[in-house]
Image (cartoon, rainbow, N blue to C red; front, side, top):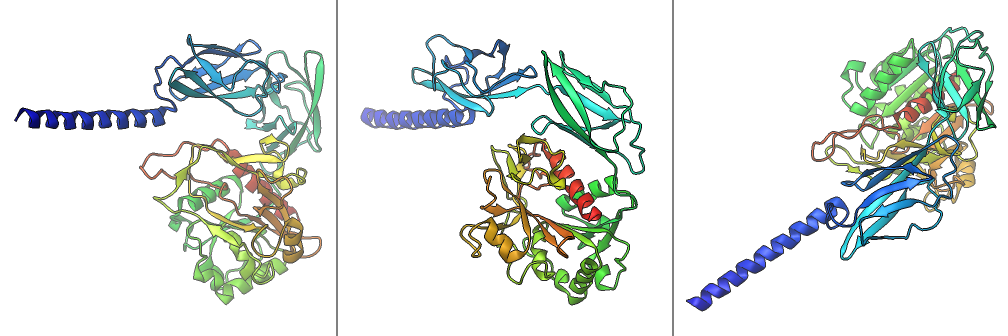
Length: 465
């Protein structure tokens, strides 16, 4: 009997030990180390004497540097808990332009940290008549759109600068913004020029939001709802048209730009292929009308004869609620070589010709309908795609400086001089971030302003052609 009890308690002890080990492992995965309150903490972190904010739970260290700071070669000043070391060692100059990761080790315990460094913009805010401009410190531009019919010849910008920075023309000065205006920013005896572009919507512009629902109030897809709400809020004279109304002979002659943002399904609805609909939209283009096709609607270029038969997007995929995922990386695009194109003006970029659209940590469905170039379709590269489709590839994924990997944004001509179709087809073009699979609301996308401005620029560009 005694031996049986001993065997029983031995088995119980083993089970309890296994439960303890599993729990400990789960906790370590959640925190990025074995113990968040361990002797592997960073006690302080400084760059050029500027202290970083340390979140010991997440391991995030945030450093905000003064305007004009060079963060490409700084030796960090770090204080660890006694006995701890780091991998890699932080005893030489490092480039903090992008996030820097390191691990603090103390015995058999460790913790992972990520340092994110930002340099203050010289311009805290730039407003005219209460409207805020977008300030891009990489391209050194100030861009804004004022209400229709605003007189640009005598405006008074209200400008707030960072400490130690002066600007000319000064805040409150009367400025003629009919053409681009150069603002001179000076700090510590050094000056740099920023170019301000202030515009107004195309006068009398009529934009139509195209949808499968009979009326705008009948739209159920939240990405489409959010996009249409933004359009109606920002473009006076916007109207809603349905595929059914086009099929029944709706008059499209007074419309400048039709925008179809389709996010509901990978396959386009059958009504879009109805001959009465496709013929009406082909005639709309022939008569000078313009099309903006986004998300899964990118595929419509084939049915409308915008590209040769079979040359539409060849890589179409995406999740639908409740499926989806959260990625620890921000998603963006490369438009290197097309930095001066009107649709990219004013975007907040992380380096020249590159801008993020979807923030890391947001729940994403990755609705994509793009052209995959290197292996499929016989395109080989961007030049091959242009030759076979007749379009101009304007953007690819953020890593693709040569624009030879994907076609994520493109424009197509009606005639040799009138490019009247723009397609935006990547999963990062996401208007509404759904709740995740556990029902937890997604964090706000800090790059939604880039999506809005890209869309606004595209509509204005098409209308001006």
